[in-house]
Image 1 (cartoon, one colour):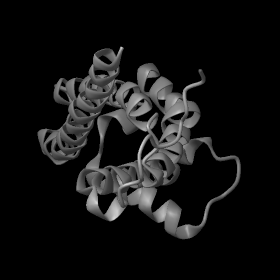
Image 2 (tube, rainbow, N blue to C red):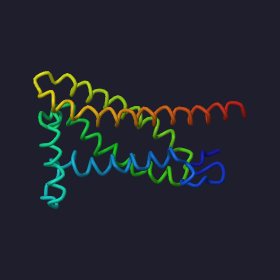
Image 3 (cartoon, one colour):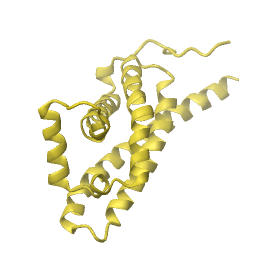
Length: 172
């Protein structure tokens, strides 16, 4: 029997699923920031002035050592954003709205990636001993907030997947 990727019961309105609404906002912001900050050096054409202004503001105001130094692992993470993070985020937004039963499985894997990659970036920023402490202090709250949301997403999706697996095990 093929596994359906649709809901197993009548869909609960997205407006009544507060955490899912938070995840939709988070995934939308993740996508927006990837497209307007992380991908800027990759674009072959000049971008609208507001996009360039946002990128310049971030680079000058936060002086993030990862953007300034552009270490190889960070370039790899940006490549992962292109081929994995942004496509999965867009798919997951739709899946959350539709209450698709496969969304928690994909978001569990996605959240695992986000937690691990964010911890690596946070450790790198905190360890930038030759970087101005004021710049490090400006960057840490953003990384910690992002990590916190990713951890909540991971715990929630783990719980949803676990409940579904254990529920299926009881039926069998």
